[in-house]
Length: 102
Image (tube, rainbow, N blue to C red; front, top):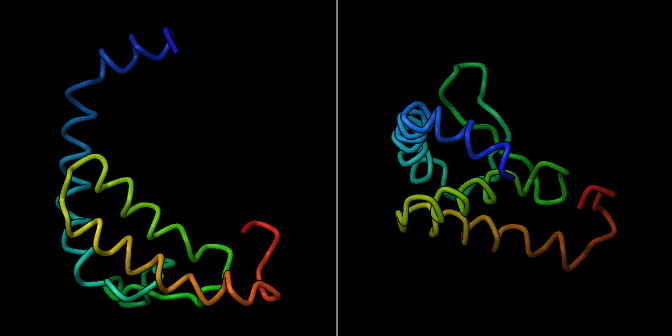
């Protein structure tokens, strides 16, 4: 990790600014797309596409929300992550349709 420390330190301002921009965007997405297992943006560039729980990408959005909660402490991220987790439960209970990636 010591090699990364200098890179992080040299780019700390950029990292903080970029994370602030990501937080600014995702904090509204967390609320607007709660109840979806987001897998991209629709043709209109605004609407978030949703996938079924057994899709191999179904856990990405909830995972991102959990990471953002850990970084920011914003409870909206945590709530969305929990909603996503509950939405994934049926796929784990009936795992016959799951892919090897899960």
